Image 1 (tube, rainbow, N blue to C red):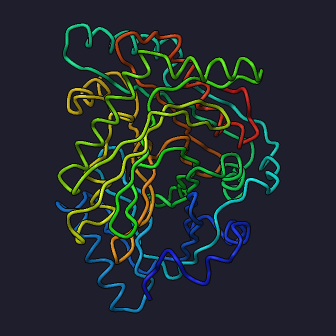
Image 2 (cartoon, one colour):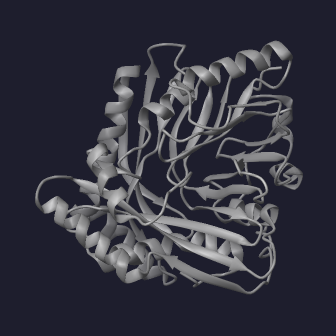
Length: 396
């Protein structure tokens, strides 16, 4: 069978699909349109370096799945560096459900274990990296760089990944919640990429491409009046508007060769539980039915929202400053079916879980006018989504 967006299974409640998620044997993806539970693996991309044309390799996987009678859908993640191997597979079973409901009570924290949290790099080193990036910008070498930092969390008990996913999913039910298995060399324990992204990289539904880039952010406040003030200030901030414009323009330029026309609405305010963002709605009618959602994702990735601009120079700064490999953080996660339809979210507000070890990531866009302490504070606020889901609020 071919997995489609509209099926009788759409009546299944999201809670039922979440309850069916089992780490190690299934994958889960939720968007504002629906939920998807992918169980088992009937075929996967080979481990190791990616094929020269990842989109073509996935099309072959889907053709083989159709011929074999398997669900003709591929699910998984592409890393920040497209030169690394992607984690994409065809499931044995694919079940669609209704979208997450904001009215469902949020589950309790997955555990009450003790935890040790180690920042990578240390906060002062991160601020020094921001200053170094600003120095590159003053010479005109680069316009924007997104610098990330990580937290290594060690818990006294294994993390309940299913409970963690449920907590993330219901914290921001209008976002993109996900859990997919990542390659792990034996005898190392399994790794799961789990998170709840507020940002759609791109979708393709019935020949229309849509993107929702987010760039320009401020932490939210528990004080309602202060929260409104911060949101209004974000809409007027020259620095944040400039940062957003760079990202939106890059998405438009990436879609333009593939679409008959591209329209842009925004920027407007987008809220999550921890952040205010500037977001734009970008859409275009595809020139060719052969262009799949994954093709679109690969054409846009990485956007300046997670890398910077110019991309090559921003990558150089990231490689020089960040003391870790991003892996699948700031990549893209989602699904694509045999018709080419699909959804791909930007892999942020996420972490990699392996037993009692978790690596959590957060980044901030550095542009002229950025201040190192502000960028550190922004990453701390972004960590809050994942840490709260772990029951470790305030550990950033």
